[in-house]
Image (cartoon, rainbow, N blue to C red; front, side, top):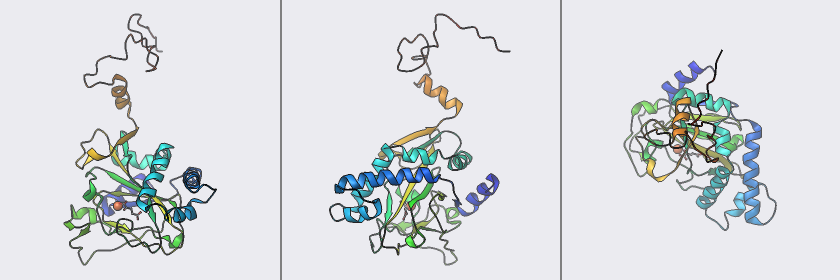
Length: 281
Ligand SMILES: O=C(O)CCC(=O)C(=O)O
Ligand SMILES: [Fe+2]
């Protein structure tokens, strides 16, 4: 999809499906981390999908989703996904080059016959649970088959603004609303606005569906949400941000860039006492 069509679709519908945007190898890496972690818990080699169901006998789904996410994050899986060229290109287009992701989501596992709305989410806007107006969501499956249920969207619902809600559902949805469930395969992902209404589609398959919803924002843009309770990890820097990072403090003084004798900053070649005269042709 051309960048212009992507921009138009995102503006109009509030969500865009990105096909084949994540490398199979990156997803396989994620699956191996899940299998390794679940095998460790169960004390024998298992596939993560069966192992997940078995682990639910001794652990809540919430705790399992959280600890599996932590393991993925610790091993750099979200970073690898977000730095996938087709994903990054779209994020740059929506948010600019200075990007961070929220490090504290959970894995979203959809288990057949589980009914609790914590796992099978009703219509909601991410804005309700603390995302700012300038935060973009990127939801992608790690493991999915056709009948495992993805996410359903209401195109254009982001244009309704902040929708009145109570107890995690909208008080009213206009009768004219259209519902769309994109067919999603491994390697695809969906980018959406924090005001776009979406919900979980039930899983009909005996095996669980695994997905990861990531929140991404520009770290220089004021966060209109609730940024206090999670950590945001920067993962892409503009040249200007790199200069800020090197200088490091809010006064932009040369604390670590001039005359430093310490090797830990990697900046010691910028000696202050003997200026280097470089001739550029
Ligand atoms: O994966 C799902 O079922 C939906 C996840 C979701 O919308 C969320 O975590 O906010
Ligand atoms: Fe959501």
